[in-house]
Amino acid sequence: MRYISTRGKAPALSFSDVLLTGLAEDGGLYLPQTWPEFSQSDWRALRGLPYPELAARVMAPFTAPDIDFETLHDLCKKAYSGFSHPAIVPVTQVEDGLFVQELFHGPTLAFKDMAMQVLGQLFEHVLTQRDEHVTIVGATSGDTGSAAIEACRGRKRLSVVILHPKGRTSEVQRRQMTTVLEPNVTNLAVEGTFDDCQDLVKTLFADLSFRREMRLSAVNSINWARIAAQIPYYVHAALAFGAPEQEVSFAVPTGNFGNILAAWGARRMGLPIRHLCVGSNRNDILTRFLTANDMTIRGVTPSLSPSMDIQVSSNFERLLFELLGRDAAACASIMAGFRSTGHMDVPRESWENATALFSGLALDDSQTEAEIRALHQKSGYLADPHSAIGIAAGRRFRQPGTPMVAEATAHPAKFPDAMVAATGIHPALPPHMADLFERRERYQSVPATEDAIKTAVRTAVASCNAV
Image 1 (tube, one colour):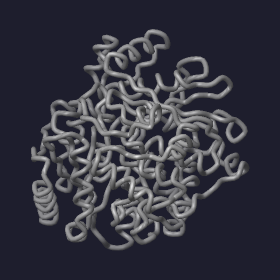
Image 2 (spheres, rainbow, N blue to C red; image 1 turned 120 degrees about the vertical axis):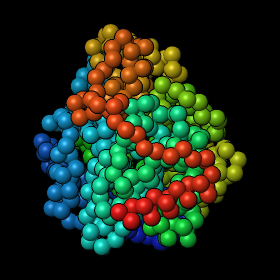
Image 3 (cartoon, helix red, strand yellow; image 1 turned 135 degrees about the vertical axis):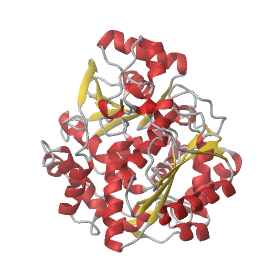
Image 4 (cartoon, helix red, strand yellow; image 1 turned 60 degrees about the horizontal axis):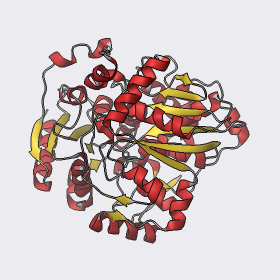
């Protein structure tokens, strides 16, 4: 398998090189040069497999020939060994025809663990083979950072620097990052929004001299390996509802478009997915695009669902590339225009192709709180703000005869204030996190400037190397 950039000016790379590179040198994102396609018999052969084996079999075409199946299977078994639910990704029914797939049973209680635990194993494997060290720089709106830190903490071949928007995550989300004290971990509280953090990370990667000096790599979903490791749970759910003979639809709360892009990828591989529903909060750029072809950046407003407080959805570029018939020059031109004007000029035909598969629903904070409350009263299910938005989207767009599966992306205990306000219930953190609010924190507050971040990264790497 080889990988190409959405902007067409970077060299095609192998899986291992894409893993370590993250963002393409032309500023684009990597995608498979050709998509693997599974037959109906291939899908049937996955039924009943333990989740780590299913994940390895779904990911194997993407990692070949760099990583063989047996090695990948072993890495997946290690990745999921610490999950608290035996099914890894259990599915439960909340209403007639509407189901929830829980993705939050990993160590940091968020769906990011599903891919990040695999990513940590993949980094360790490839870097050990090559006898190399890399510096991971990532931006987080809340959950990616803690998942990345948990997957990479204490690994000698990795330095980890995570940028989060100061004061714009929940306290649980922040403390999950800032109470990790291993010397290879650095947390930066950036005085700005998540989009500022994400732009700063992209700026560092665009500076090829700095990128090579620091041996930068990425754990955000700009790294293709993250998307590849998220495809399996859509396969798992679809098989549970009778795929490949039965179609299934998915509803996904999303800000950066990576999670739902993985569902699109599963469909591209031949999984019978009928419809994909985007759940947005008041920062509704994705829903505005799907309803009116309006991909225009507005100011980011803090919400009850901070992981979706985003206006620049990085992974949308991958879908745009596909909607444009893989025309890299057109994709690069549109993305340049978006960068300079704040408006993405998507051709009408491409937009219509997107809306044939995708729908969008946005809830503001009061609607999100009402959804949490109503869901708990009617079904007894306790959903965090992000998951509640996804469930609402699933309800809105479910179609008779087709199971609708909403992705529950975070444990409600990560957002206790919102849960108490909506239901009066203060969900308890699991035992391994019970003392979270007593742990010592360590982080640096930095301005949202390129120079400040570069200085912090250099200091972090030097400090890690000195240990």
